[in-house]
Image (tube, rainbow, N blue to C red; front, side, top):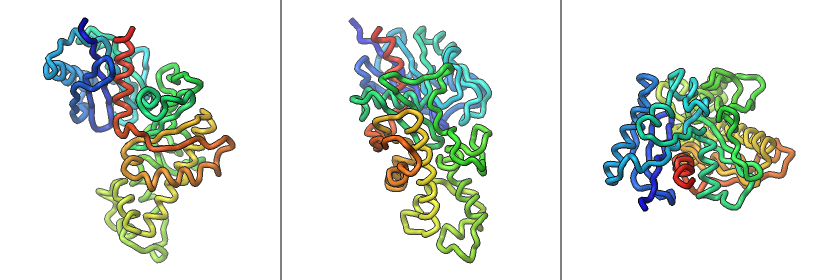
Length: 324
């Protein structure tokens, strides 16, 4: 009997990653391309091309693919299998399931990337022995996924656990990528940290701040990135350290809201901002979360799956059809 295979797809803000996996979720081959947002079918064409290439590379037939799991940031309509004005993709509609089902003659499951990541954590990561688990990514955006009493939370349209859009600032000083203000993602995500830093600098008294970061205001932040803030802090810049401390406090408020909402035993953290700066992300959360939640503080740790949670969760969704 030929071992069934599945495709796992991770649609990020910058890249589309596709992996071909066997029935044990072992990745046989994978590839990625910069995301194509020229038109609404650009991403599905990319997945089709990359999936076909991976099959050819591994000398497998397309007909052997029994399922395709696709993980992406939302919002989405899971039943219809398309994204709807996704926050990190400049398109109003991104059809995925129908064009790919037509090409591969296989079931396509679309799932929120945070939900995909917590599914992977529960199957292959630190959450294998937990019935109440949350995964949070702090990356270009902020997202999450939750398992409560052993049940994966998906939501009516696939948009459950969009924790990055929890409101952490009632004054709504900064606008989120979704167009609304005051959201956690507007302050602490990789794409929005530069705006948060600029907003803070514009309100600083130049006579009261010192160091290289204070002078960055003069450059108008034309090329400033989240990485720059953490680099300044790592080098001991006093203003950067204060800003990182403030971001840590805001992250702790977000984690407290997650704890109150889902009452998890374990929260794992991933995403580029967290994985590259654990000392500035993880420790402030642990130090401050108890100030903002009435619940027992869960175990909080960096995910052992590093940057692969979303892809492995998508593979698990694809394999759910292989194992039926």
